[in-house]
Length: 207
Image 1: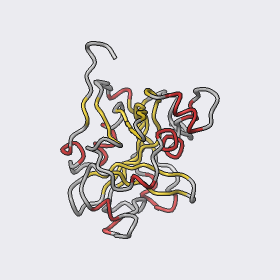
Image 2: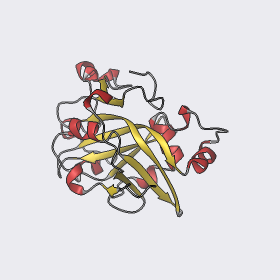
Image 3: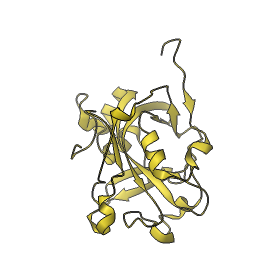
Image 4: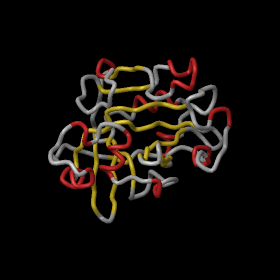
């Protein structure tokens, strides 16, 4: 960390804005950080997907669908929505918008930065390659995020997101269709997946 480097934990105001698509884009270049059992790991977010709780059939809470799993999405922005996929993968989402409006951003891939040796151990990988943190299940395992962190306040000291002065230009961000939401009909074609252009860490299929 050089003398000119500054970092700042994202504030509640960042998460409670009304446009989940804008927030999803702006999370690119931010840093997802965990401190688990005193051990810090982090990575730069390189891929996200936006989900809106209104008129988006791909969203778990579409049109006010409240279940035990989605309840945290209705409690306002800046919370961790973590759910189990296929009974194996822990997927980490950031809740956004205000109380009662259930929006969220799925973090799909990160570029590892801090605690890389620990990430390799958690993932049982011999060396650093993109599959270490490429894909939402992989990054959660690398950062040791599990469903036990469901509802965690992202302004706390266990899981949080930082701004580390990584400014991206519009040309560096590209959009495409979300992955694995074919069941959503026409909403599957919303270009709400965002990646940093040419990042080797983005998940497959690449945009």
